[in-house]
Image 1 (tube, rainbow, N blue to C red):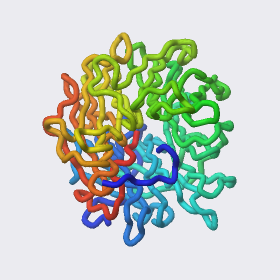
Image 2: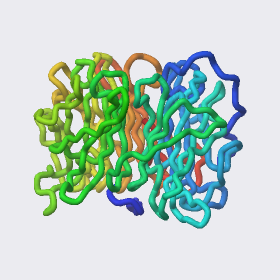
Image 3: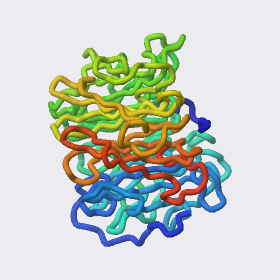
Length: 470
């Protein structure tokens, strides 16, 4: 396998279910923010942002795998591109449709919708500007779409929509959307309709940011927006978040925090969301305080959000109880997701290390599950999965990147989160996803499933699993 080169630093559908007709609206908002067909099971959206569409390379595709009593499979799916019926625009080279994904019931019709970033979509004569599109949920799954209003000030190759997140940011009960891309970060306020443009405002100047995460850190019913980004003078990443006061958004700083990836969940069971940050870069001259192979931090939430003076939990591959050892280029923390895999009421954390060597295979990749508890996140009982783990399908190869993306989500409604792992460079960069079931004893590799780009009839070196919707 060869390593795919990104323009960003640091980081067809024959015989398939494609876009389907819009259905009549349901009476109540969707129970789950990722149940696209309203059947009561959570679904998972997986992108192949470099997929070939027709004869066009790098246009991108989004695959939705629908949950059921038996989990997900390649058979029950929808594949959507910018050439699908009702989806705005046209598939073009290097659009990267699907590079970012986030879900929520934006029009409150009982079906979750999906926001899709096309990171380098060209607008008129401006190349690589970027665009975000909403794909609408319905009884038969996702179909059609609406483009979010485009800021007029975007520059060429700005990568607008490199990151997207959906949550209720002002506590009014209606989901909102935030979209990142360099200094062009925007906030779109709900409610949304399929025909009326959403209003959008500029998020105060942040610097160049491509990531975003969301969650309620102070239990006030309004989710905070966290935008990790690199900045001169803080190579570990500037961490701040925006919180709703009831009348306006206020930016809160965590000056001692580091990280370039983030997820929010209640790790210690106190009902406040906790901020998990991934600081996956190795130490170097500009940042000597880093940990070899990468590490993660947990900043615990409270009535006023995370206390900037607290001492966060720090876990790396050299922490007691964590398998393996920190090595250069492991990238431990490059992908994060949170969910309860054993049903004990504490959120657990999936940590991707796509650069992990497995035996003699370089950059094969690994995912470690860390367990939450009343005392917070711990290395006790943690387990690492690779494609060499008994029960995990597939073969360990150089440059697979297993763990490049991760998602913890209960796909079979048994009360325990399953682990979905993306390997965007698997099979000569065609990509794959692996699904491992959650159980009372934690994740169980028995019966794990491998879904490849070939299973989905995706064309080209599409990078299936490069992104998994959160």
